[in-house]
Length: 245
Image (tube, rainbow, N blue to C red; front, side, top):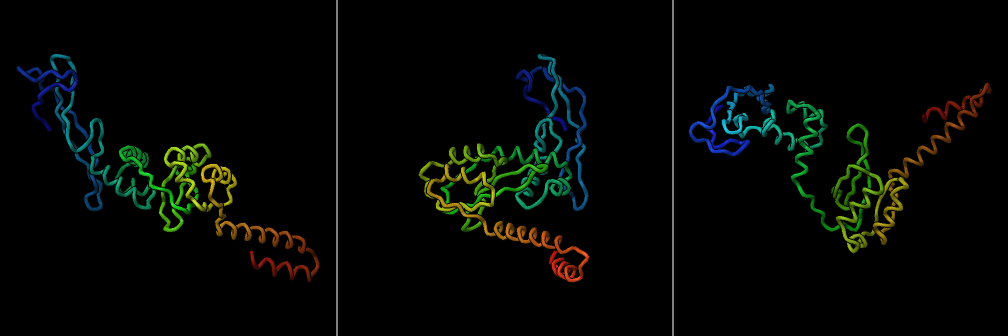
């Protein structure tokens, strides 16, 4: 890959009377999208130029990749498209022939180009958290009526949650929220009372059933241990209870 540059990218001097001349080549291996089931690479020999004015060199640019990068723009676009689907970083990296770290970096760079739009809050919200990035917990809030995820925060501490809602939603909008459904995380209670003064707090039925089931199972195990004796009648009762373990 070679061409005649119009000016020096370092000092900006125009290329007149051979101010800039060719000075060898540089070989780059550029990662391209898969061809069928095979990973594909482009071995590109790029022209190097030397400027007599500033005595600095620079390399020919190609629209295939960004400067000082060896992953093509098409691969990065493919990573962004796949990141919108329910796939892990390892799965995306395998499909695009890049490392999981590169996938995360491309997603982070792409995220900066989009300005989040926060519409009015619905009347019924739901708070939840999930694990990501080596066990770290993220926070999300959802429209209960249609199940749409309204936004995701990479932290779930009270400071981050309060700051997010106070910056992006006015008090009038937050006062219109009628209910907030949460799990049994007591930390959300004070946050909700402060952010949504008119909202009622609802404990998710799934977590209630889960708590009841755990409590009953704990009680069953406690009774079983009391019946584990040498008495035959007690052992019959013990075996009956053990069937439900």
